[in-house]
Amino acid sequence: MTNSNGVGIVGVNTIGIPVVDQDRALVFYRDVLGFEVRVDAPLPQTGGRWIMLAPTGSAVSISLIIADESAPAGVETGIRFEATDAERTHQSLRERGTEVGELLRWPGVPAMFAAHDPDGNRFEVVERP
Image (cartoon, rainbow, N blue to C red):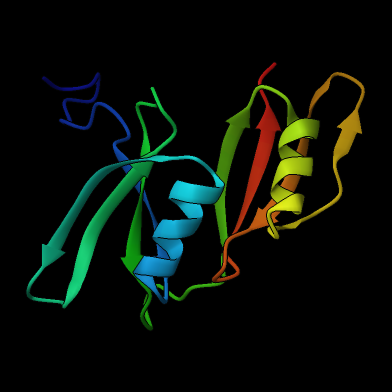
């Protein structure tokens, strides 16, 4: 199968997030955000693991990759996670010790806020319209 340009890329599978400690990051994304673990397999050549997680039912997952010089931790990921209720999610994450920014509300725009994982990687949570 190919796309209209004849290239075989047909979707987005997983988005890598650089982390310093894969175990700590796994606890955050699994236990705090509630993502399901789809893959957790050793990578013998690196000493790390291939870890993929996603919200239940999501077609796209995240991969917790070991941070290095070319992919440092503590970055703006550009990821926008979707929530059914941004205010409730904001409150819940704050109560669980997650660093969250102000809940933003503008006319005609879904409510949203920034949050950080334990490595300082920033992502946004946007309310499903």
